[in-house]
Image 1 (spheres, rainbow, N blue to C red):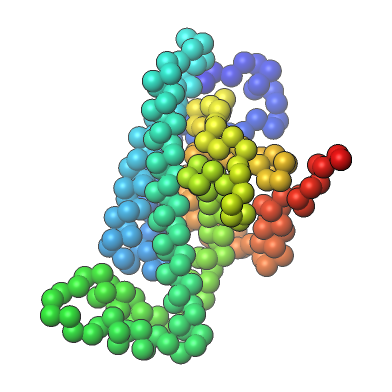
Image 2: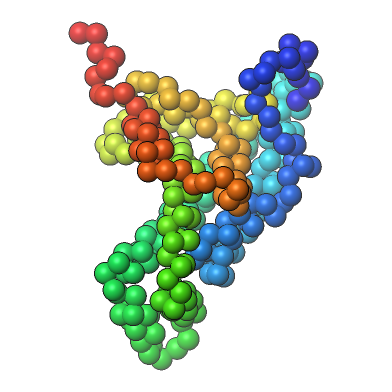
Length: 260
């Protein structure tokens, strides 16, 4: 998009890199940096797939934005295709992060209760054939058992991914279940509805909870938050930071806007 002068002068204008400025391997490398993901060839393959599709969709987003700016209209087919690709990418990103986080939390639990050795024995039971998935898991657990410092690193990874995953989960549950995140059997407001972000062309999804609009999250925002996982120059969020964030994500108490 080619912003007008008044847009250029605004200090609160969001900045997004162009597709050419984003290394196609950034997302894959960031996810590979997570312990128990980077040394699992199957999760690593999923991360690579996610990165490939992210690169493809980013190009679509900017092309749609360019057409909207220069031609002042875009075809419904183009909009539908971008919306479909965006939703499928969000679903895939959620499943990868959910799978990894559950596995990481299991490892922490087994470490605390002394169950790592028993889990390794269970995974290495003779099956009569080579089971690569079980072998990979057993090898990972052996590394943790022999080097307790990995536990601290896994804890840090879970903490760093807490906020990106929560934002991803909130969008995903609205799109997939038409519910409000963390509130089963609830009814989401306009689930799946999105608008084209005027700065990067990505689809902006409304994050609504208990009648309050908490903000907008785009597929591109999610991708950037995942790419930022590899930046360990800043300290991870504290317990207070995460508690404040979780409180914000719950929105106002139910009935806050009841005028009866």
